[in-house]
Structure formats: structure tokens, C-alpha cells
Image 1: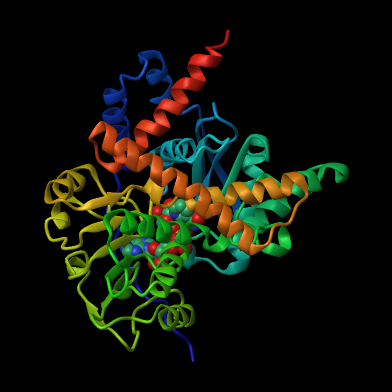
Image 2 (image 1 turned 90 degrees about the vertical axis):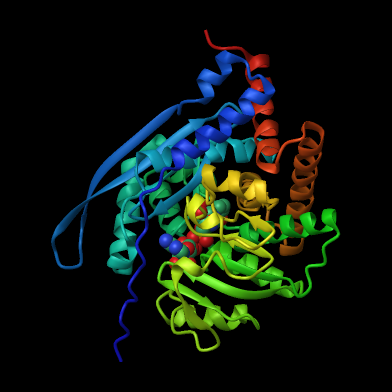
Length: 430
Ligand code: NAD
């Protein structure tokens, strides 16, 4: 039987750059950021746009556009994901690269921020085509990425397999004696290709942990709490998996194809099996009703986890939100207008640069293992991740309390002050 590829819902053009700039300006004003350092952080260091040809299965050649934006590397090599999506453009890459700089700084990692990707809808291409597209993109990026320069990782519609193709292509262009010393050019690799135990779940586990820390701080018991997830990919699935294990109940899910709900609970594992057998779509799942996409964020629940794209929670749908906690698994899911409304309503927001930072922390562990020729066990990785995230969460909570600001502003303040200190100590060349 031939299964039809499910039809995707429309995505509005995103304006993430203005959101990230607003968030930065707000925190920079509060800390009175040195004006010269502000000028540096307001712009990206390097922006690479590549057009590259790839032969399709039918023998025709298609030309693709790929991006890599390197925002800042004052704390260490550029770090950030590669996204394959029709909305990828230079502004999206700039915004996401900036968020990476704040995220790595907040997490206390020796990294800067970068982001990139290819403007395409992967559902339109075969696996061999995606492999050739990825390899040719890697070749086009050339030495603009590197294990001590700029280290990509998975993001929307890219995964461990994508990273393995990048690694193999990058290594193959090096002299034989140098190949294995380049293993850490990408993170999020499959275990057999130099990946780390636990990296697959690191982001979702981190989202869960920040919710758990938040619940502890507010004396909220997560058992029987209702949560809904937008995006049932790597981040959404793992966050739901760990929350369900804690006793919380998944009552609604939205992905690129539509939305489903069941107030009595949706089994995370059963939905994952269904989605895998249905070309990545949740639609048609037997134990839930299909609902209108516009009703999704207004569902009756305690916690919302946006884990798809940017600008999904807007001034329009924020008014209908009934949850008291939003845990931002995605990057930039809440726009500035929505945030204003939500904070006024007393909704707590665990900001993306804290909430989903488990991913880049997991990547850092993979990079360290590759660099040092070590292999850590799953338990060790998860413990180290929890320790680091708890430190970040505590710092953000304390800063929010001391400065009387929301958690996002607090997270940005910590990130910006660390960067400011670096510039002040090192000075500006020449
Ligand atoms: P993924 O490709 O594994 O999953 C994306 C999910 O979002 C899919 O279920 C897809 O159907 C859904 N989706 C796509 N467009 C949608 C739309 N318009 N409406 C509703 N759902 C839609 O991607 P991922 O790696 O899970 O990344 C999700 C988000 O988390 C992104 O914002 C990404 O930047 C962020 N993030 C990912 C990582 C990571 O380690 N993968 C780390 C930090 C942050």
C-alpha cells in the first residue's frame, strides 16, 4: 500500500530577528552595557551564503541556498545547529545565531554562537538526495566550519544521520593523518560515528529538568498536571517522555500537519510509534480527537511546551492561553507582544536560552569526549547535564529575584555580563 505524504500546515514568515534584538536591548539597558561592547554584540561577525548544485534522482540538477551565520566567538568556537526548512533565510539564521551566543554564555560553556541551514522542505526529497545535498553543502562551507572554529549540530529536520554525513564529508577532505582529529567538527552524531550517549535526549531532558526545577521552586507537584506539546520531533518527544515518567499527562500535541487532543491523556510512546509509521505525522492517531490548529494553545492545561518553530505564541493566541507555565523547548517561540500579555497575566516563562540549553550542554560533552579520546557512560552524561542545568537555573532564578525581572531578562543579563567581562579584560585588537 502506498501511504500519502500528509499535507503540512502553513507557516507564517517569521520576524525572529526583531524579537531577539528586543530581548537583548531590554537586558543591555538594565545592566547599562558598555556602549562599545554593545555595538559589537548587536551585529554578527560573519555571514556566509552559499549556492550549490546537486544532482537529483531524476538526473536534473537543482541549485540550493545554504546559510551559516557566526554571531560571536569571544568565549570560544562558534556553536549552533543546522536547520533544513523553507523558512531558513539570512534573518532567521542571524536571530538563531544570536540566541546561541546568549545560550552558550548563560550555560558557562567555552563557545560562541552560530546557526545555519538550507532553505528547503526535506519532505520533498529522497534520502539519497538529502545525503547528496548535505554533503555538497558541507563541501561548500569548506573550512568556514571546523572542530575549533565552528561546530554545527542538529536542529529542525536534521538529525544524527545528517551529522554523520557532514562528519564523513569534512573528514574526507582532510589529509589521512588529520582525519580522526576532526571528529568534533559536528556534535549530535550517531554513537557509532563518534556521538555521545545521551545527546539524543539531552535537549528534551533539559526541558523536563527546568520544568522540574521550576516546580520544586514553586512547590508544585507535577503528578497529574496536564501538558501540551507543539512539535513532536526530537525535543518535543523527549520532553514529553520524561514528563510522562514524572506522572504528568500529555493532553494535546501539534505538529507540522495538524493538532490532536485528549483530556484523559495521550500515550507518548504510542503516539511516537504512530508518527514514525506515518511519515512523521501525528494525524490519524486513534486515541485522540483532531482539533483545529487555532484552538491548540487555548487548550485547558497547566504547562505548554512549544518545541517547533519561532514566533508560534503571538499576541493573538496568547490571550487564549490558560496554562500557567510555558517551557520554551523551541528557539524564539514566544514573540515580544505575546510575552507582554503573558507576563501581565502572571504566566511563567522558562526562556529558550535556559530551557533548551541541555542540547548544547550535551553537545559540549560530546565535543570534549572526542577531543580527549574518552567515552562516557549514559548515567555519567545525564548526571553532569543535571548538575550544569541546575546551576544555570539557580543563577537565573536568583538574578530574577535580585533584579526584580522576569526569567528571560535575568537569563539575558547573566549572558551579557559574562560577555562584557570578557571584552573588558581582553580589550579590542589592535
Ligand atoms: P525536529 O525536526 O526533530 O522536530 C520538529 C517538530 O516540529 C516536528 O514534529 C514537526 O512536525 C514540528 N513542526 C514543524 N513545523 C511546525 C509548525 N509550523 N507547527 C507545529 N509544528 C511544527 O526538530 P527539533 O530538533 O525537535 O527542534 C525543535 C525546536 O527545538 C527548534 O526550535 C530548535 O531550534 C529547538 N532546539 C533543538 C535542539 C536539538 O538538540 N535538536 C536544541 C535546542 C533547541
